[in-house]
Length: 354
Ligand code: CO
Ligand code: CO
Ligand code: CO
Image 1: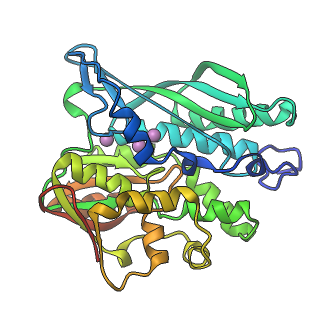
Image 2: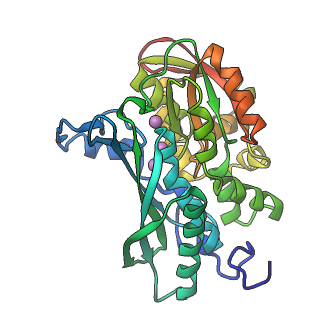
């Protein structure tokens, strides 16, 4: 890679300095968002198979008995300094909701906010190139989009996919006895926060960029060969936030074991030094009422469990006897998957951390 290669991670322009929050950590506080959404009446339509009820990953709209459309949108401010990788990560992140529904991606549209007075147009070109190459890897085209002049750079995609109406994986079908598999380690919020503060060594930075740019396509395709009950992906609301969407929608309780949860190298060190994004602290407040933490868990560990992830892994619920064959298959095909807990009983969504 030469100096002008947009993939070269060390850049002179530091995109993360153009914005306050980064990646999925720049989501609105979930408690604020809910207050507003509760006041807006829901529109009913008989074609809607998955709507807004259970905070699922994507909307699903039935076309006929064979086909349903799956649609999702995701965009955010820069999570890394390099424009190419910002584009690639935003694309992997947007596509992830399609894979979490067990669907096939068809095509995408760009959403762009760009400060044309403060950044050279070359930066935009590199963001779009990174996204384009990621979508190419996913096997889909980007067919257009919309751009506005904006104070902070923002980028993301609307992704359209398709699925058979009988094969939709919602977050509402986990059952007692299901085990819980996570396909990427936690810590991207804390580490990217460290990158922004220039506290992160180069190899850690490269490692987290590589992980965030990894598509969940491969993991999803492997998962679909097994009788999975439920699936979602771990993004802005953190592991416990997204798991709680599953336990609430499925009316179950779950237990996760801290020492079983994979964490990116350097995350614990930064978390102990209190390098915690605001989004992660918000998530902790949000999940606290329905999480019961073991007494010996340290504050920094609770933060990691609530860390706002950008382009995190799939969170899969699968009946116990099928969990190990799926896990072995994922690991054999280079997915960094782990069994992190289980659904214990029917209930009101409570999560126990041991
Ligand atoms: Co999602
Ligand atoms: Co999303
Ligand atoms: Co799903």
